[in-house]
Length: 494
Image (tube, rainbow, N blue to C red):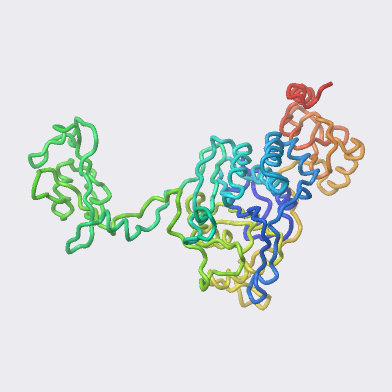
């Protein structure tokens, strides 16, 4: 069940996104876009004269990045990920294993905060896209994989003894419920127009489209019109309703007309082409009637951010606004919440704002907040409030450096949560009371021994600490059920 988000819209966090994600309520985000490090073995730094000045990060990974507490958490919450990381270590090396450990522990949290009707887009490149896809398959389910999108990010790229690397990969997954999807179109390319809109008259360019559909019918659409009976060739008349409505927008009786009467109106409007040879007429579909080409999983019509583009921030890994607008438009509705946990130059936040969505951004670098403010001024023409009353004070984003506290967890003493949890942690000697693994405090959550739905009380004697995995298995059931299930999974052996 979806929860209300405990973070206000237009919030940008600066800090470790893992800590911040752990403070966001479960199942409260509609769309996640992330453009994380790619394991490129490079260091990125913005020029000192840019609005991103001082921004720098290393995309270099070693075995030191496989933090023991992260691996423990991954093994408990999703054992398949743990084995995938070890497999990558054997197949590719310690650098890839360190990178995947960093990504997996964060993707676990992103999976938790995403609504069952939500979508997630993971932007990467071929360096690790194959490993990341197996991670995403394990987390979100291969049946919820929708697309591997290819974005042509640059022109020709030569010099090496191989095919020129010119594309990024975007992995698109959804939750298990029916997800948001808005049919989205891109403009026709000149080549497409030249190929398909080959005819022209005083009204403009047009293409010829069939006026019939496959199969026969018993109604008006299966009857003769002007000496032509589509039933003779196993077809029926298929009147283009949108073209008819556009041509006769002042008429309210179109639905009451027979198919033959509708075809007569189309002909009167000059929307039917009669060939000089042959008898079967066709529809004239003009260029200005087309919605464009439905978006495909190969994106070649969106260029990288140019050197003199108004949106350019000098953030080295910046992605074009048009790309994020396409993703946000396709997979969310106005008012939905968009989350970018590696927001960097704030492109996803700007796209969400332009399209009327709520948004939350997170980035490790403090410069991200200033870049967001500068872009909002420049690209959205929003005069942010500087304390002098000159701006839109109600738009000014929240800039936070500390995680928020989740409000979807029911705890005994809301005003003294930390001391309560510390006491339980010491009494359990740092172990999960279910699987008995020794774990860091932040991995454990407070649980009612006897669930409140079964009459359990909000009392100290009815509280314990469970790891995320044990808590999920137990749910609102008893400890006996949890221990039985842990033995069945061979996590407990006694």
